[in-house]
Length: 78
Image (spheres, rainbow, N blue to C red):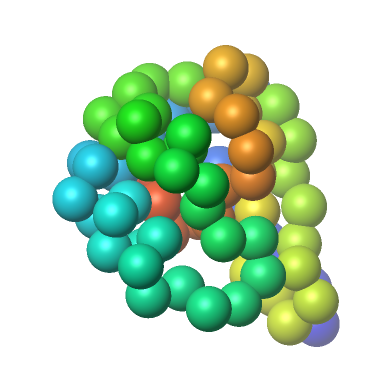
């Protein structure tokens, strides 16, 4: 299986709004949960600095200024 990211390294992205992050934080029960620190970054624009893939195909991102690991579903193109 070939994994494919939606946002390559260097892409400018926007973290989705805080209510969506809070919902994800409350309901996501698997790998790389959001921290409460990350929720404060809702609506923040940032740049992709690293892309990785969780076993099974979930795409995960590290951003330039926002801390932690971000799921692709929590980001959108700017």
